[in-house]
Length: 286
Image 1 (spheres, rainbow, N blue to C red):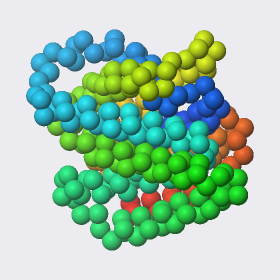
Image 2: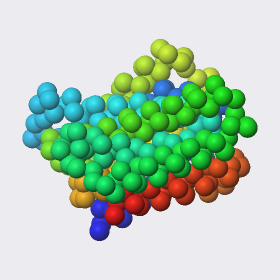
Image 3: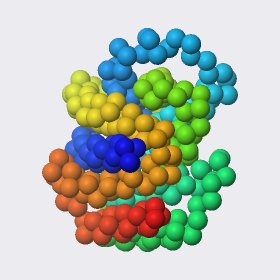
Protein backbone atom coordinates (compact mmCIF):
# COMPACT_ATOMS: atom_id res chain seq x y z
CA UNK A 1 0.00 0.00 0.00
CA UNK A 2 1.14 3.51 -0.83
CA UNK A 3 0.57 4.70 2.74
CA UNK A 4 2.84 2.01 4.17
CA UNK A 5 5.54 2.79 1.61
CA UNK A 6 5.36 6.47 2.63
CA UNK A 7 5.80 5.55 6.31
CA UNK A 8 8.78 3.32 5.51
CA UNK A 9 10.37 6.15 3.51
CA UNK A 10 9.90 8.46 6.51
CA UNK A 11 11.49 5.78 8.67
CA UNK A 12 14.57 5.76 6.45
CA UNK A 13 14.94 9.55 6.76
CA UNK A 14 14.42 9.46 10.54
CA UNK A 15 17.18 6.90 10.94
CA UNK A 16 19.65 9.74 10.22
CA UNK A 17 18.55 11.75 13.28
CA UNK A 18 20.36 9.91 16.10
CA UNK A 19 23.56 9.78 14.06
CA UNK A 20 23.54 13.48 13.20
CA UNK A 21 22.58 14.57 16.72
CA UNK A 22 25.28 12.35 18.21
CA UNK A 23 27.89 13.89 15.91
CA UNK A 24 26.98 17.50 16.76
CA UNK A 25 25.80 16.76 20.30
CA UNK A 26 28.21 19.08 22.11
CA UNK A 27 26.80 22.15 20.39
CA UNK A 28 23.13 21.17 20.59
CA UNK A 29 20.70 22.36 23.27
CA UNK A 30 17.68 20.03 23.08
CA UNK A 31 14.75 22.48 23.37
CA UNK A 32 16.05 25.33 21.20
CA UNK A 33 17.50 22.89 18.65
CA UNK A 34 14.08 21.31 18.19
CA UNK A 35 12.61 24.74 17.54
CA UNK A 36 15.36 25.62 15.05
CA UNK A 37 14.79 22.32 13.25
CA UNK A 38 11.11 23.10 12.93
CA UNK A 39 11.81 26.58 11.53
CA UNK A 40 14.25 25.18 8.95
CA UNK A 41 11.71 22.49 8.00
CA UNK A 42 8.91 25.06 7.67
CA UNK A 43 10.69 27.48 5.29
CA UNK A 44 10.53 25.30 2.13
CA UNK A 45 6.78 24.79 2.65
CA UNK A 46 5.86 28.48 2.83
CA UNK A 47 5.73 28.88 -0.94
CA UNK A 48 2.98 26.27 -1.18
CA UNK A 49 0.75 27.66 1.59
CA UNK A 50 -1.11 30.76 0.25
CA UNK A 51 -3.60 28.92 -2.01
CA UNK A 52 -4.18 26.32 0.72
CA UNK A 53 -5.19 28.88 3.33
CA UNK A 54 -8.33 29.96 1.46
CA UNK A 55 -11.45 28.77 3.22
CA UNK A 56 -9.56 27.32 6.17
CA UNK A 57 -11.96 26.95 9.08
CA UNK A 58 -10.72 24.95 12.06
CA UNK A 59 -12.34 26.29 15.24
CA UNK A 60 -10.89 26.55 18.74
CA UNK A 61 -11.07 22.83 19.57
CA UNK A 62 -9.52 21.97 16.23
CA UNK A 63 -6.64 24.40 16.74
CA UNK A 64 -5.98 22.99 20.21
CA UNK A 65 -5.78 19.46 18.83
CA UNK A 66 -3.61 20.41 15.84
CA UNK A 67 -1.20 22.56 17.85
CA UNK A 68 -0.99 19.93 20.61
CA UNK A 69 -0.15 17.23 18.05
CA UNK A 70 2.88 19.27 17.06
CA UNK A 71 4.09 20.72 20.37
CA UNK A 72 3.64 17.49 22.34
CA UNK A 73 4.95 15.09 19.68
CA UNK A 74 7.80 16.48 17.57
CA UNK A 75 8.20 19.36 20.04
CA UNK A 76 8.42 17.83 23.52
CA UNK A 77 9.10 14.33 22.19
CA UNK A 78 12.06 15.29 20.03
CA UNK A 79 13.50 17.51 22.78
CA UNK A 80 13.49 14.51 25.13
CA UNK A 81 14.86 12.32 22.34
CA UNK A 82 17.73 14.76 21.68
CA UNK A 83 18.58 14.89 25.38
CA UNK A 84 18.54 11.10 25.52
CA UNK A 85 20.89 10.82 22.53
CA UNK A 86 23.30 13.27 24.16
CA UNK A 87 23.14 11.33 27.44
CA UNK A 88 23.21 7.64 26.46
CA UNK A 89 24.04 7.71 22.74
CA UNK A 90 21.96 7.37 19.59
CA UNK A 91 22.05 3.58 19.40
CA UNK A 92 20.30 3.00 22.72
CA UNK A 93 18.05 6.08 22.65
CA UNK A 94 16.37 4.99 19.44
CA UNK A 95 15.68 1.49 20.81
CA UNK A 96 13.81 2.83 23.83
CA UNK A 97 12.02 5.74 22.18
CA UNK A 98 10.59 3.66 19.35
CA UNK A 99 8.25 1.90 21.72
CA UNK A 100 6.13 4.92 20.68
CA UNK A 101 4.55 2.45 18.27
CA UNK A 102 2.84 0.70 21.15
CA UNK A 103 1.93 3.93 22.89
CA UNK A 104 0.30 4.99 19.62
CA UNK A 105 -1.91 1.93 19.73
CA UNK A 106 -2.71 2.54 23.40
CA UNK A 107 -3.75 6.15 22.79
CA UNK A 108 -5.63 5.17 19.64
CA UNK A 109 -7.62 2.82 21.84
CA UNK A 110 -8.26 5.51 24.46
CA UNK A 111 -9.14 8.24 21.97
CA UNK A 112 -10.84 6.23 19.23
CA UNK A 113 -11.96 3.04 20.99
CA UNK A 114 -9.72 0.76 18.91
CA UNK A 115 -9.02 -2.62 20.54
CA UNK A 116 -5.28 -3.34 20.39
CA UNK A 117 -5.82 -7.11 20.35
CA UNK A 118 -3.68 -9.98 21.64
CA UNK A 119 -0.95 -9.64 19.01
CA UNK A 120 -0.36 -6.02 20.02
CA UNK A 121 0.06 -7.02 23.66
CA UNK A 122 2.44 -9.84 22.74
CA UNK A 123 4.37 -7.49 20.47
CA UNK A 124 4.65 -4.90 23.24
CA UNK A 125 6.06 -7.54 25.60
CA UNK A 126 8.68 -8.54 23.05
CA UNK A 127 9.59 -4.91 22.43
CA UNK A 128 10.09 -4.12 26.10
CA UNK A 129 12.29 -7.21 26.33
CA UNK A 130 14.36 -5.55 23.62
CA UNK A 131 14.61 -2.40 25.75
CA UNK A 132 15.87 -4.44 28.70
CA UNK A 133 18.53 -6.04 26.50
CA UNK A 134 19.55 -2.66 25.11
CA UNK A 135 19.83 -1.02 28.53
CA UNK A 136 21.69 -3.98 29.97
CA UNK A 137 24.28 -3.64 27.25
CA UNK A 138 25.42 -0.19 28.41
CA UNK A 139 25.51 -0.51 32.17
CA UNK A 140 29.25 -0.97 32.14
CA UNK A 141 29.83 2.14 29.97
CA UNK A 142 27.40 4.74 31.34
CA UNK A 143 27.03 5.68 35.01
CA UNK A 144 23.71 4.73 36.57
CA UNK A 145 22.43 8.29 36.91
CA UNK A 146 22.99 9.08 33.22
CA UNK A 147 21.52 5.74 32.24
CA UNK A 148 18.34 6.38 34.26
CA UNK A 149 17.92 9.98 33.04
CA UNK A 150 18.67 9.15 29.41
CA UNK A 151 16.45 6.08 29.37
CA UNK A 152 13.58 7.95 31.08
CA UNK A 153 13.90 10.76 28.52
CA UNK A 154 13.79 8.28 25.63
CA UNK A 155 10.72 6.60 27.11
CA UNK A 156 9.13 10.04 27.61
CA UNK A 157 9.76 10.72 23.93
CA UNK A 158 7.99 7.48 23.09
CA UNK A 159 4.94 8.45 25.14
CA UNK A 160 4.85 11.95 23.61
CA UNK A 161 5.17 10.64 20.06
CA UNK A 162 2.53 7.99 20.63
CA UNK A 163 0.01 10.48 21.99
CA UNK A 164 0.75 12.97 19.22
CA UNK A 165 0.45 10.33 16.49
CA UNK A 166 -3.06 9.52 17.69
CA UNK A 167 -3.81 13.26 17.71
CA UNK A 168 -2.62 13.59 14.09
CA UNK A 169 -5.39 11.20 13.04
CA UNK A 170 -7.91 13.46 14.79
CA UNK A 171 -6.22 16.60 13.39
CA UNK A 172 -6.80 15.39 9.83
CA UNK A 173 -10.54 15.84 10.41
CA UNK A 174 -9.92 19.57 10.88
CA UNK A 175 -7.10 20.07 8.35
CA UNK A 176 -7.26 17.25 5.77
CA UNK A 177 -4.56 18.86 3.59
CA UNK A 178 -1.41 16.97 4.65
CA UNK A 179 1.01 19.70 3.54
CA UNK A 180 -0.93 22.42 5.35
CA UNK A 181 -1.19 20.30 8.50
CA UNK A 182 2.56 19.65 8.37
CA UNK A 183 3.26 23.39 8.07
CA UNK A 184 0.91 24.33 10.93
CA UNK A 185 2.51 21.77 13.25
CA UNK A 186 6.01 23.00 12.37
CA UNK A 187 5.00 26.62 12.98
CA UNK A 188 3.58 25.68 16.38
CA UNK A 189 6.81 23.89 17.32
CA UNK A 190 9.08 26.73 16.21
CA UNK A 191 6.97 29.46 17.83
CA UNK A 192 6.87 27.56 21.13
CA UNK A 193 10.32 26.01 21.50
CA UNK A 194 12.66 28.68 20.17
CA UNK A 195 11.69 31.25 22.82
CA UNK A 196 11.30 28.55 25.47
CA UNK A 197 14.75 27.20 24.65
CA UNK A 198 16.24 30.69 24.84
CA UNK A 199 14.78 31.15 28.33
CA UNK A 200 15.75 27.71 29.64
CA UNK A 201 19.06 27.05 27.91
CA UNK A 202 20.41 30.37 26.65
CA UNK A 203 21.48 30.87 23.02
CA UNK A 204 24.39 29.72 20.87
CA UNK A 205 27.72 31.32 20.08
CA UNK A 206 28.80 31.58 16.42
CA UNK A 207 30.78 28.35 16.42
CA UNK A 208 27.99 26.32 18.01
CA UNK A 209 25.38 27.90 15.74
CA UNK A 210 27.17 26.58 12.65
CA UNK A 211 26.93 23.04 13.99
CA UNK A 212 23.30 23.56 15.00
CA UNK A 213 22.38 24.79 11.51
CA UNK A 214 24.15 21.83 9.88
CA UNK A 215 22.37 19.33 12.10
CA UNK A 216 19.12 21.29 11.86
CA UNK A 217 19.15 21.25 8.07
CA UNK A 218 19.69 17.50 7.83
CA UNK A 219 17.22 16.53 10.56
CA UNK A 220 14.81 19.36 9.80
CA UNK A 221 14.58 19.36 6.01
CA UNK A 222 14.95 15.62 5.52
CA UNK A 223 13.34 14.44 8.74
CA UNK A 224 10.48 16.95 9.01
CA UNK A 225 9.89 18.80 5.74
CA UNK A 226 9.86 15.50 3.87
CA UNK A 227 9.62 12.91 6.65
CA UNK A 228 6.76 14.49 8.58
CA UNK A 229 4.85 15.09 5.34
CA UNK A 230 5.22 11.43 4.40
CA UNK A 231 4.24 10.35 7.93
CA UNK A 232 1.05 12.46 7.98
CA UNK A 233 0.19 11.31 4.47
CA UNK A 234 0.54 7.69 5.61
CA UNK A 235 -1.74 8.30 8.61
CA UNK A 236 -4.34 9.83 6.27
CA UNK A 237 -4.17 6.72 4.08
CA UNK A 238 -3.83 3.75 6.46
CA UNK A 239 -4.41 5.13 9.98
CA UNK A 240 -2.20 5.88 12.97
CA UNK A 241 -1.56 2.35 14.25
CA UNK A 242 -0.45 0.81 10.95
CA UNK A 243 1.64 3.88 10.10
CA UNK A 244 3.45 3.58 13.43
CA UNK A 245 4.12 -0.11 12.83
CA UNK A 246 5.47 0.67 9.35
CA UNK A 247 8.20 2.86 10.86
CA UNK A 248 9.72 -0.22 12.49
CA UNK A 249 12.81 0.01 10.31
CA UNK A 250 14.15 3.10 12.06
CA UNK A 251 15.72 1.40 15.13
CA UNK A 252 17.64 -1.04 12.94
CA UNK A 253 18.62 1.44 10.23
CA UNK A 254 19.84 3.88 12.88
CA UNK A 255 22.48 1.36 13.97
CA UNK A 256 24.03 1.67 10.51
CA UNK A 257 23.69 5.45 10.14
CA UNK A 258 25.01 6.08 13.65
CA UNK A 259 28.16 4.11 12.86
CA UNK A 260 28.72 5.83 9.50
CA UNK A 261 27.88 9.46 10.36
CA UNK A 262 28.78 9.96 14.00
CA UNK A 263 31.53 7.32 14.27
CA UNK A 264 29.72 5.94 17.33
CA UNK A 265 30.39 2.24 17.74
CA UNK A 266 27.04 0.46 18.19
CA UNK A 267 26.97 -1.71 21.31
CA UNK A 268 26.06 -5.35 20.91
CA UNK A 269 23.16 -4.95 23.34
CA UNK A 270 21.74 -2.03 21.33
CA UNK A 271 21.90 -3.98 18.09
CA UNK A 272 20.28 -7.06 19.62
CA UNK A 273 17.72 -4.85 21.36
CA UNK A 274 16.86 -3.15 18.07
CA UNK A 275 16.24 -6.50 16.38
CA UNK A 276 14.04 -7.66 19.27
CA UNK A 277 12.09 -4.38 19.26
CA UNK A 278 11.49 -4.71 15.52
CA UNK A 279 10.35 -8.29 16.00
CA UNK A 280 7.82 -7.06 18.52
CA UNK A 281 6.63 -4.41 16.11
CA UNK A 282 6.14 -6.98 13.36
CA UNK A 283 4.19 -9.26 15.69
CA UNK A 284 1.99 -6.32 16.72
CA UNK A 285 1.23 -5.59 13.09
CA UNK A 286 0.10 -9.12 12.22
